[in-house]
Image (cartoon, rainbow over all chains, first blue to last red; front, top):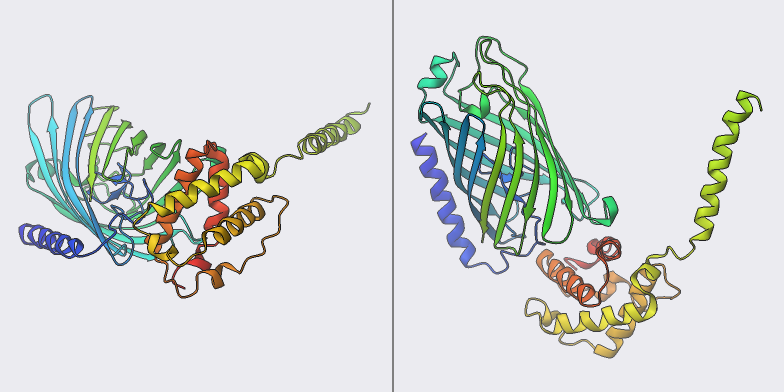
Length: 281
Length: 144
């Protein structure tokens, strides 16, 4: 894990250096870079979207840094990370997730590295939706809990295909985005409880998001993330959220959400708030 | 009335009332939703001022005849919005030939148009309807 994380950060640095030589790393319209998902990939919050982070158009490069805090009944999750959009064609992302158990103060820490490649389409301007393929590699820094609950592996790689299409004058004349992902994953709770188990579920998962630009700076929407349920002893549920995001300009965004994460590690009905701050450059 | 006749009568009634509704609202063109001739003229004036102050794209307009641009822009917006005008200018492909408009340039122009409409007091719904129609020309404008 260490070498790949270092490599990703090196890529980030290189891309950022090259971006300083490029003009117009903010060539796209406000909000079209989305926000930062839990994995660090441009999204969405609970799921990545087919959008690429920041506001670069070809051949410029843009990036984002973010901090996210989620607080549900029995747990908190803090995520920090960064992503680089290279020429509006590829996105590299890194994130550190710290998952804290309120009852005993224990922490599970995980690193996630992501790569997203834009294959076709344009989210705003083409009939064809913007389509990307992505990978997210999760590696636990604290693997003891995953082993204790019976996960087969403490690292794993998700693959996904994502498609997004926005209608400029959509619902009620407001710009409306629809995003659908198909993910191949054996992760337990986003990888925080490892991968696989004694009761392997299907590996293909469906994820979706809708978003409505109420104004040019306020966006409201919802997300759904289907999740595998691989551990006989610990039931895992699908997750969903309702969010509001504020884009006062192209430099900063603030997202607030109500999340329903279902049962986590035997603790039932984990609901709560989610806050995320992103800086784009 | 038999139940069969009643089941036919309801859709018939609905379709009549829908027709009445649509014929009572002939002012549903985007042109009128934007505010007609005066509003479009204001949008164009604001748009010219926005472009003039926009260092990202002003170079593309340096050789433009502003008066001709004003007239053609008014005609074009009017036509695109289903107003009572005929656009007498060149095609979007010809107008932008050799300009090398990039994706970023195009988006900058979209932002200038948004600002122009904001300053003209156009509500967001009609703004987006116009932008959606203008966005349809993107393929004829960029990379020419």
